[in-house]
Image (cartoon, rainbow, N blue to C red; front, side, top):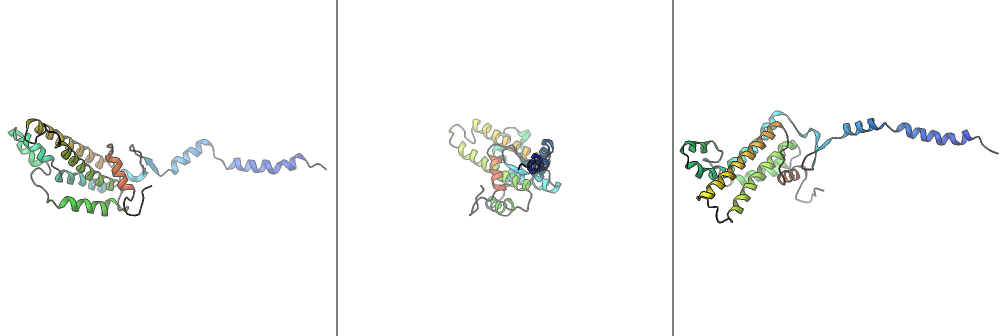
Length: 216
């Protein structure tokens, strides 16, 4: 006894048609994937939320404060002082450089770094861009200290010598211009991109480093 071909093959065809009907066209699947994606990739390679950039204006204004503190605690004004003394017309500019005349106490950088990292950078309640710029300001000030320590091994760079005067003036101006660029990015609500430094700032801002927690 033979069964009709239509009765045997109809369940198979019905199941296949049901699976095909559940599939969306390629264009619709691509659009749904883009709409469902809740993150973007930064130029440094880290995945950040789509709503991390351009927060409210007060968060963008607060993101500039770490760079002003980094200028105040740095020695950029001291590096520029010898070359400004050679030009009496520009001697008054030292008063407009944060940290050039009025220095903060020696204990302030240690207290600031501890409080900023423990209570702000690791606090997920604050916006990511605010935590990123706080960490970036501390890393830039630390990078300037590394340049200062490593430059002491160069015998021709004396702080009061002719070559050293121009060298340290160039270091201070480069540091100030980097800070201006960072402040511009903070006001625009974007992440600044510097090799090594941006990756380190994202590592501290996105992951919980230290203790028993692992970032990966």
